[in-house]
Length: 291
Image (cartoon, rainbow, N blue to C red; front, side, top):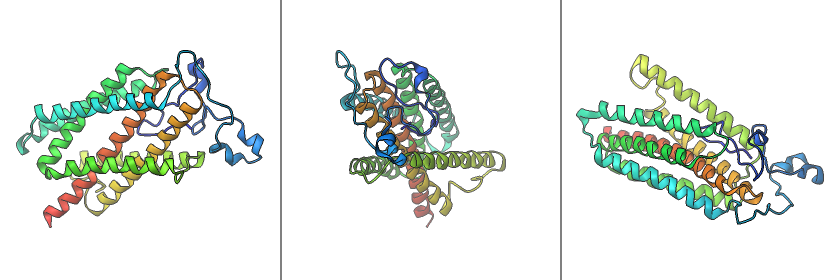
């Protein structure tokens, strides 16, 4: 199952010894899946049925393990958090200097986006590129969190962090309990919904830039609350897709270096959830203050 998150074209893992072109599988397919449909007589089972064959064995323990994924993800997230804290501490903001702060956030965000695209089109994961992305993403998150704390209140950032952690834990438990079943249909629905969500966001930004205010009103008031909840739900779906990708990679012998790709995808998804949760809690706290 090819994973999905804000970088929609991010490819899936591939086996050790597989050429970079061999995993150019159709969108939503699992490059590890075997012909389970032919054995069971039900094509739908091919989406979720586990491979009957054991995972590939690699000399010297070069196959990816869950410990590799956890370690790489912890390293990447630690880079994000460290840079966010440094940005918050070293780039203090007040209400008079918000434009400068937004400029730094936009610059860091664009650099992070560029680096994420560069990794997306690489044939193999590049740890330096992924960590550089995490660093600039951390600066972006640190600045917007500091600005939000200044304008709305310090509690909103704590709420956002706790909310992001709760979403991650909830989806992980639901996935492990098999309450969430990741199939091709699930993948197609999430991808279509995410593309629509991004396009609406882009339209809102354009109307805001040329017309002033909040554009289409998707980031304020009642509509902002609904849009924020939808964004977080999409992030939760991205997490399920990423968990499926990691599970398939480990079960079917992805090379150890691909754990960096798993860390990259999980970090992208958690950043998505954090940003959407920050927006949601900002609207909620802003409404409380105005009331």
